[in-house]
Length: 121
Image (cartoon, rainbow, N blue to C red):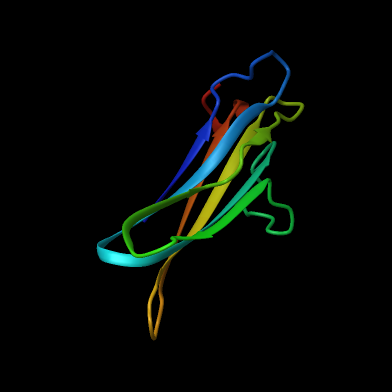
């Protein structure tokens, strides 16, 4: 199971927001029904924890049938810089192999940030 965050390097025009999306990936060693829920949050400076009440984007899908791999992406959303030039995207995904009896469930998280707040500028 994996998660990835894709954010445009630069906005199309200076001063505007960047476009982003978060993807969850799932695979298994044999055909199975997969369900993936993906949560995305964005903001200025990362404060150390997600705010689940206000997602930038979400996606929740189950494979139509039994497959070995499955991917789900959020709709594209905008990433705005704060007054200090900072921005972050937090992504979280829940991966579930749906089966009779007990489902197997795993979570993955990822944080991507930029500007002076991540120490690279």
